[in-house]
View 1 (cartoon, rainbow over the protein chains, first blue to last red):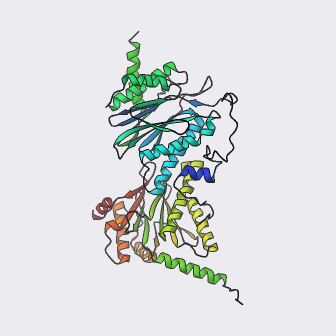
View 2 (view 1 turned 135 degrees about the vertical axis):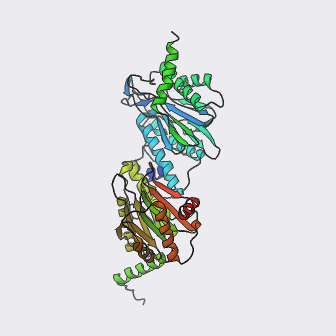
Length: 275
Length: 228
């Protein structure tokens, strides 16, 4: 049954491969770096590119029962705020989530494609990919985006999953070549990533509770927003708070705005007393 | 000198149809039945891993009877079609009608052009939401497509199962366990032997679920529902 109308013939269970192979115009980035045309390197990069929204600090911290993944809500376009409520933390499937830093458009596209990818595999094969398998697949997608990096369109994901077989939460970070590295405790990326890591380092210990891990995440984002212009802090007037998700045995759970607000309220009250 | 042979188109189509029907008649039956909270899919299937029923999209399911390799291929193609539509447009733009039309086109073309027709029969089901009715499409080996109401049956001896269900159908949609027991009884009666719950492949498109409505029932669940 080759090439019956409306159904292009395809082998394999990857939606990403299917898309790049049969509908390259719909794929956000091309896996083919040999045949495809790669536009010349801009030097210095981004100078000739009109401003595009960039997303910023995202982090993940392990706790006893899983992982918390969180991110601020600001996107910037040069020195302008492009969006105050952008969502950088995405639920990918029942047991995994990812957060992104980099050019907002391709970042969101990658998250959407990755969601489709995992669901597609699950439906075709009848089983879910392993946690490690999902992390590797994301690495391949980051690698496929490499030509775009030279155009100034960096997409940098942070991936967390609850590994059902090992019964633990896991964190994976990436580099622009698709290199995949597992973190055993915590990690933060984006323009305020270093500031966030500095904060987490001082408060992290093994066996945190969910509440403690959430509090450290929000503290780290607060400090990152304090130091980095690209990272947004809690906006009490508009009621905009960072977004966070928990990956645990029960699946991916959203942390409600109300819970965020309470944590921040306590933190801000504590800080104002210092004066 | 060898004479070029001639076969009339009518003869050729008839032969192909007969061939396909024979292939499908060898297999067991699959039932799709509407129940109060959605649509139930039940198949007489001794294998626990080679499925005849599958999820396609949020509210769409697929069932295939006949030659496994062929309907498995079509199942995968359907999932690609649905995921592609959902990715390019939006999740709510994926519909059973569009997928069934694509299947109908494909099977029709294959029936006309290939020497060997596909020995398959398909069901594409969509559970309705917000007062939308459920949709059940049955696609035959030659690409003909029918829109079914309340229930549909494919596979070998499907007419007998259909007759059994028709006798017992009511205007009121049954609860899940009643619907499942009915399917079980229908399959048992036609197979003319006891059908243990391990040999029953059951899945539902449950309207009350969030997001993906498809759920496979485990052997334990099935046994419990039939017993209660």
